[in-house]
Length: 110
Image: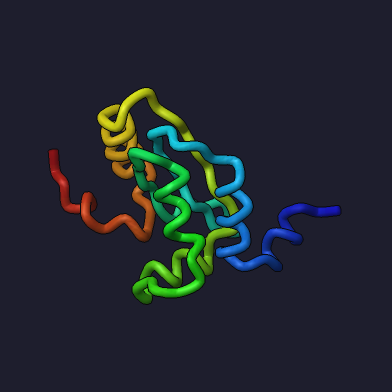
């Protein structure tokens, strides 16, 4: 069976809930990807499981975040030893990948 077709039929919340089961409380960076494997968002967390669980809630999100969750068909995770490592990795990935839903670091010229 084609997993990508199967994933496309699932909601972003279902996809995120499935990934949530695999996470622990490690610090790290996560990426949310759409059906075209484009990175929608890069985020960092002191505790990946706690942070990603926020996206698994079915309501209470802004319109922009709700759209991002709806478009999410897969996620990628990189654990780090410290929160500082996660922050630096997140900044580098945002500069490199320029995800559509990351807006705060877009104007950073340094």
